[in-house]
Length: 98
Image 1 (tube, rainbow, N blue to C red):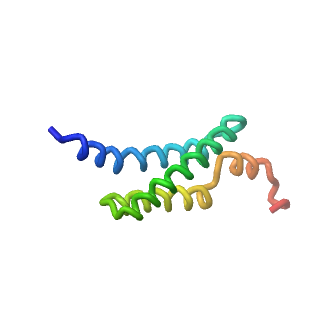
Image 2: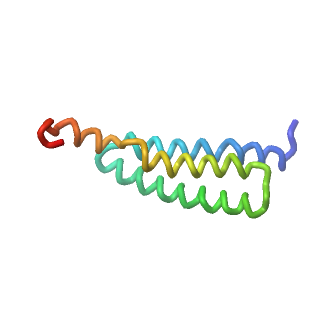
């Protein structure tokens, strides 16, 4: 059975990426008022992930690469992946308005 420090390291390596990706998916797939709430939650989680990544890199912990990749994926995903609102806005557009 793993001891407490090893268990917290495993949770640190698995929990942070899952929370970050879930926040990104909810922010991108939500519509309406839920989209605004999901976007606010995403920004809060992005700040938390940034601070945890900064702490991990400064202390040279073993999971620094996982945290850095999670942060990079959240930033690139927020900018690159289209959201539901942008997809709904282009459905009603006519070809002449492109």
